[in-house]
Image (cartoon, rainbow, N blue to C red; front, side, top):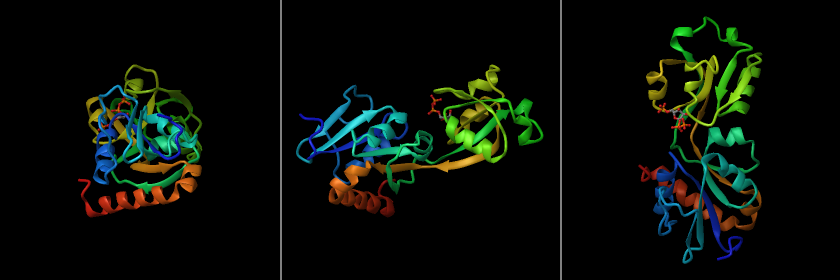
Length: 221
Ligand code: PRP
């Protein structure tokens, strides 16, 4: 197998929350491959008959694989895509993986005004998005980049606040944190490498239309 074989369409799927629903969505348009499941340790799974190759990557790395053309197509949350700043085409809003980004603080230490948090420390997986948000409020902050369990930051005194995603609100509730500022909504997006989009235009266009049809018919539910 030549991983660079241009006859194949390479699709980057993120491990984690988006994996299951993404692979099921592709299966509905006939894009599937034997052994495509999240717990597998196999990183490249190929369907030679359909000339499709799935690569399984860390969530935050999907935009990188797509920007460099190591994958033609990828699925990634808008939050991670924006944070990455990668130069890719966004083809479709897939609608699932809905969440929002926000700022939260411990309930017991809530201050009266957002601006009174200026010059304090904020723990986040999204320092670029957070900085843009606080800049828009005229606030300078100290950003502490974490890779997970962000909510722990203010509980143990690492930071005064967090900027993170909320899906169900359970993590905030269970850790006595309160949302004090909304930043942006996010859903999963279908993205494409800019060169692949031109070189494999018909195939990518057809695939995008097939996915759109499934999403609009509600069959993805
Ligand atoms: C994300 C996010 C929150 C949580 C929000 O973490 O960072 O911690 O989900 O979801 P909820 O509102 O439904 O509770 P994730 O599960 O991706 O794990 P992580 O903490 O390792 O980043």
